[in-house]
Image (cartoon, rainbow, N blue to C red; front, side):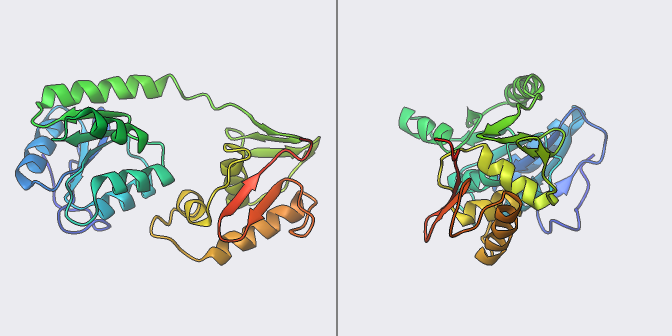
Length: 247
């Protein structure tokens, strides 16, 4: 049974509260397709939430605990490709794009934007469910998280610990997330907007000062300053990057 609605996600969002094989978020603006697909997946034991609007879907992904997203590209509030990029800025949840666009250039753009798979409309529930099972199997084999190393910095995401040389750094939760996010992209300039989306779960942007304050605290704990940076380097109007000072 599909029940109405979750208080946190108004209007078109509904959820099957039965225990399921997977937690699936369906973002589809066609009411007939949305309700039919949600019902059929729920009947097969999945925990299904569905919405017609991209931004409601992005908000739900930011809350976590979703196994797979099925994303339509033709949405009323935000283009599906833009919604996909927003999701990728805040989550690594597997995304299956549902599209009527079947030319090779469009498919390449879908994957470049961060999709894990795609289905061409019209598609059957059996076809979609098989794709979901394949993604979940793939995700299950990628659970081990490697240690991140940038010069003397050693970051263990699973233990939620960071060392500078042999010294354990006393970091807050957000300081650790910020450091780990930059360490996953060593040498890459990351915009403050991306950091706000990924670390603070603010996909619509927010106050740059939040990032600046946490960078200042993080620099202090790394034994550096903005005037004399070692690991953390910023460029006004562009972003911030984490580098190995020994290179």
